[in-house]
Image (cartoon, rainbow, N blue to C red; front, side):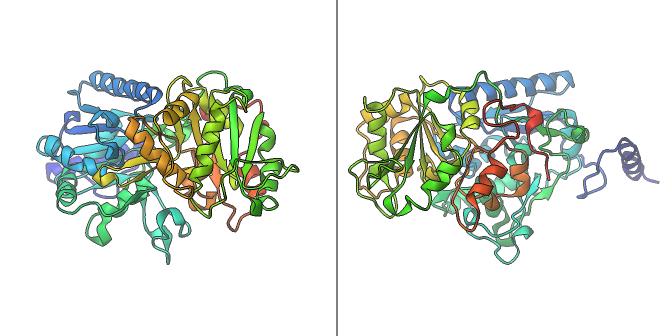
Length: 483
């Protein structure tokens, strides 16, 4: 019996007794990399001060943990600080830099969110099962149960066949794959104008119509809470996306603006009134027609079939005027947005209103060529008073009333050097348009669209807490169980 075979047998026997799952890719260790210094950790951080602080704490924790297990210190990088390129958060434009910097002396690039906990000894145990001289794309797989608009109806015949990573569990690329993709990025400009669901789009780019590797499932990369009994075998776990940072922002400190128009006064507005309107202390409906029965306010901007830029900028100006009570926060939503204001108030306890905060679900346009980020409007756009003040003081304005308001605002914020802050708890689409396991570890704040659903039922299923709307517990234990 060879030593390699004996070692493989003992490995399987020993870890089998301890209950650790064994990777299906192979049944023995590879020696192509040996220690933690060959792993580059990239925390998918953001420029807002709250997120910078959290990412720095995660960075420090990883380095301290490496010292405790007597490993040479790895590189732990913060994504937002790698360059001034706005598109870095979309990862693909960053690949040439990663290849040039780490392509010769490293074996793995591992991406994690600021909420991702990592047990480094277990992670090393996992990575050593894979031959780092080959191309690998590792993660916790998600899949669509039905074709969805946010993925451009990809794989319409069988959406579940395509797997993409849950970023909360972390995901890893071997350096041979990084190096090849970097050359591809340099030789072929990134084709997609819009970045909508990054995790799906990265998986598509890597797969490359079957010419590249598919995602390999690693069961030890998890999104369970750290204290959950199911996480005993996990190398990664996930903290809540809705942390407790103090008392929720007061109801009276959020001004809510609902965009509507005459043709939806009897169709969509009643849904808002039956669901979340009662959660708002200060709310106004803005329309192209003044209807005292709702009531709605006509801002003098004609309705447009798309874009609504003129209406949105009229709302921004009204927010800073004496016509409405002075508040620190402005929330702009569509009349077919479903939202939990108590959860939003809890989230806002983590942010400073004296900073220029723009918060929601982040999309990107033209990020491969520079481009800009923006908060997509349907999931709700949240602005601090400081952000609105700087936007309007800059002279930012619509080039037409029907221009896309969220994108125009993104261009203006980019020109001012002000970040947009992403939260995965805001959703531009319906619950049906997202992977079940992705939503299972969230406490969602919003959904959008009434297509082929009962919006009132969706609101009560996804956005109402059992304890009611006022005394909410957003501890880690409150997160929905994984399906």
